[in-house]
Amino acid sequence: MKISSFDLEEERLKEEIRKRGAKRVLFQLPEGLKAEGPRLASIAEKMSAVAMVSADPCYGACDLAVQEAESLGVDLLVHYGHSEMTPQQRVPTIYIEAKTTVSVKPAVEKALPLLKLWRHIGLVTTVQHADMLGEVRTMLLEAGKIVAVGDTGRLKHAGQVTGCDYGNAGTVAKDVDTFLFFGGGRFHAIGVAIATSKPTIVADPYERRAYNIDNNVRSVLKQRWISIREAQKAQNFGVLIGLKSGQKRTDEAIRIKEKLEEKGKKATLLTLREVTPEALLQFPTLDSFVNTACPRIALDDADRFRKPVLSVKEALVIVGELTWDELLKKGWFEN
Image 1 (cartoon, one colour):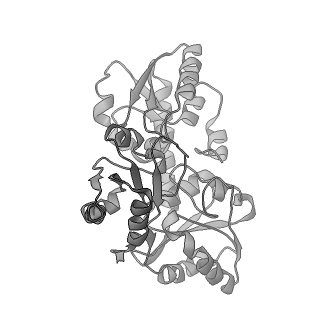
Image 2: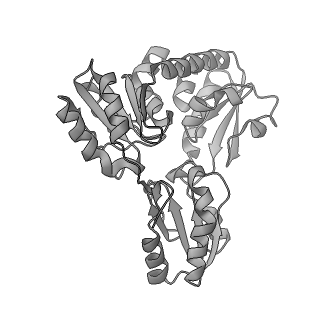
Image 3: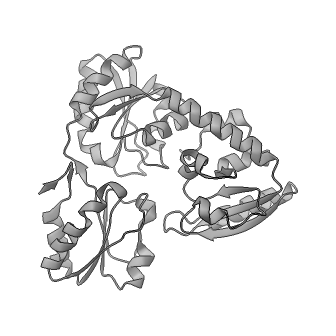
């Protein structure tokens, strides 16, 4: 059955519970799908399983609820909305990608006039639309475009991007004039533009419209420059270690702490599951923070924090290992 705008693969869910003999199931869903949690739990209960739905935020496959599943004695974790990123053996886990059932054609048709100045187009999308990539590619070819789709092998699908992995875009960036991102919202498109320094057009199938996000990108980069300049004046830093299963980079945090101290700064390692303004306000003696967990927090949520929160690469500007121009060239993400 297809619910809302997504295929939740309910028959597969039933079959996985049955063949595994799962007696206790935990569902983990991103914000846009959480409303389906109670209904999915009812399906599991009809299979004689105790079903629970995680109400905590879920930001991606890097945010797998392994610790919660272990503490609850779960024998099956069902993670919706993402493809597998970090293999783990601690709790049996299935990923249901929640592919969209909304046609991308109307939005892509509206994107074609915005692409008229460019011939070489890089094509990127999220996991929800990955099975439509061939259709969109054909539309672009019929419009006389030359299309490039990158594949590093790190993600499940060619052309797929995530909030912190734009490698598939990066591998073809030198061969294209611009990127077309088809999917919902500006979030991933801004990431593509920042990671590749290429113009990026959005074709949003949910809003059935297309638009250029250049102004959004300029606004984000201006804000990042201001944050770096403010952090350069700081003496006391907090270096954040994320405790989510796919975001824990303890060794990297220690290295950043050492680099800051070599420059005469003081640095304290802080561990936390959620990087929130309220959590950081508990440390008033710290002037600035370096986040080694999700790199998108510094880029997207800067205006929520009272003090600068830098990504790891931005911290390298602080210690003199990167210049601002080099950061713009290399991007904020690992490719």
